[in-house]
Length: 338
Image 1: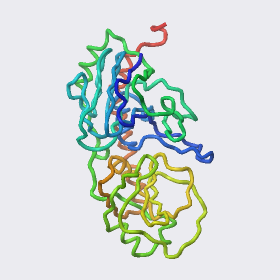
Image 2: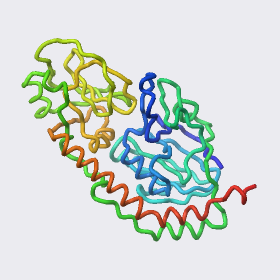
Image 3: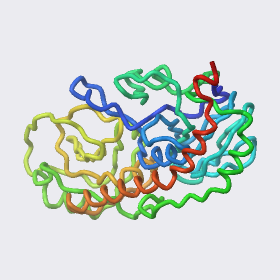
Image 4: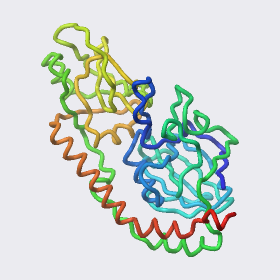
């Protein structure tokens, strides 16, 4: 029950919902950059939302399945193909031993998430299978995939049930709530925070009215933005505090940095605002050179948007329960495989 890496792609790492509770030790939360796509891929593969998926960045890998599996992909369209034929995003797919999944040209987005039913059989580190590259921790040996890696699957499917399962999954309809659809916005929504008032009125206005370009130095730790310089009313020292996904910190050069999944555990730079959680997936799917614009919303509005997204995920999970049970019925049990 495994998958062999024929070509690793640019930066393919296993990610889940993050490694929570260890920031006080200097270990970042990490996890999927685009949590929406990660959770969608899992649900469509018949999993719970939090199993590790393969986060595929820009240039996808070539993977040979040495055992049958049910897979699903969501997020960026990197022209996936199964045995040379186009493979759809957002649909459960039955793959057989010997099948090859590969990726081609980027059509949109940056990160595609590949899930398979049952997840990957890798040991959790501090409660998570997420890969932290800088710390060489978690995932597959704490690193991105390499040619020749053999990835162990956690579940095995009954070979005699595959034809019927494939036919049933192909006939099933999946209705994605509008809240979870990929509808890019012109402007990312941001909230003010405790440090916003420390910046000049002109800087706050510039954040909300100007265009910023994502710099080439951007990565999973932070997106560096190039645009108007943002300045404090007066220079002052701030106490370091916990860093959060989406905080817009401003170092001394005045060029903002949006903290992303692999952000540092604490930081002392002033933060001019925070990107709403609901819009972080859109930012995570942007690449260097693309533009970012912001608009202001209140904390209450951001919380409402987050609640609506959670409710939509709950409805989707409930609607996919029959599909999940159908796939689970084809899994080889421990007694049957003994």
